[in-house]
Image (cartoon, rainbow, N blue to C red; front, side, top):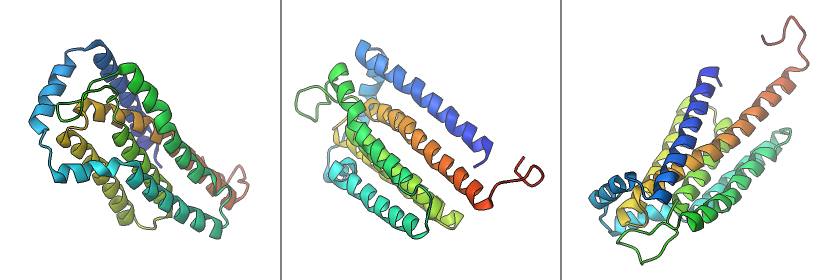
Length: 224
């Protein structure tokens, strides 16, 4: 991958870190950004069956099996191809999924944010666990599957489907009233950082495989 794309991804991760910090600060300090959040929620809040079905895309029972199926396929392809350290990418993806509640649950308890009028009284709505589940599960599945797709069109379709699933779940959660918009945006930011670590792992493996397949490079024939 070009250095330009790598720089763009790093910049996006930096923006995600700043964005997550800003939103969390506003939530714990009851800052003015929450007024905007309430206004946006009021404009979008329309609980219906469609929004509930979209929100279900972030359920563990839906998103995690998708990731497991993709990981099983990638593992089978990798082993059949004799890929060195075939287990590292899938293990990293599974590890990210485990890390989601490790990060989200303590944040929910610490921020103790109340929910919208569409949910029972209580706290623990920030950040959105369903959004993080959807983003990490579908995002990790996409990252581990991308290297096995042969055409640019197939890769673009996969990325588009991943984005549609995550955005669909996010929209459903807000429209159904399960979460405030900022709960969802904060989970996007958190998930972006987690997925970036997986991308670093997978891209590092790809470079290692290319070096191994080309053998030990001489000073004249090696990459510059």
